[in-house]
Image (cartoon, rainbow, N blue to C red):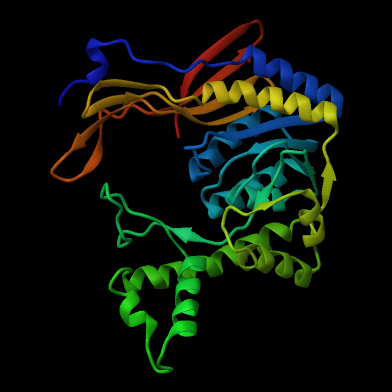
Length: 336
């Protein structure tokens, strides 16, 4: 295919709200008497390295602030990106506070660990941070896509094998390697050690007791039976995190703000036939006063039956920026 599939048909576009979200952010700043930033990802978006540069652009615009509140909502992503995001935020503020009205999972929980105070609403939760990776040699699913492998899953398989084995000298790895490449097992083990180190490093920004930071990090990385286990406000307090309840009025404003972002992040697919469609979905949104930066897909997908997988074609996905400059609102591409 040499031209866009969408060239002959109108494609679905998600709405982009700016005035509405800016008004809510202004209300939040008035109520909190402080600077408010937003870091929001859709269910299919994720925390990634490019987000660091997008956040830097916003922080450069607002400048150093004595205190920053960050509204954070994400299902996770890269732990190393989380470390860089916390480091960047700490460079621009003396005091970092996180607002969590909804889910703050995995790598997003890592970002929350870097805050002096974490405010959680009735629907809010953190999660475990046990590591899973998708390696070039990972197993594949029915669509020939690589699947992630977690340290917890491997450990549980091996422990179960040893518990049920009829012979004490049986080797679980000999059978396991038929399904999971040895290099994947090694990579997962290394990633798990890295995850513990990253969490400890993030906590060190406000917890000077190294033993306490390591204890919290190890707990989040190894004490839960599921990666998606919801850690609600009371349990988060017991772990030793600086948790406070969200005021009802602030929580309501954050949930209203989330509604606009959810509308922006809705699925925006245009189907042409059984094997071709176009995707215009918005994945990640970052926002501060007078500036909004977001990443939007703009890509054709084609299904290859002989390979049992979908392939990207004509990919014009990009970061985009909306800014208020005086009385004008300017929309441009944002290059990373």
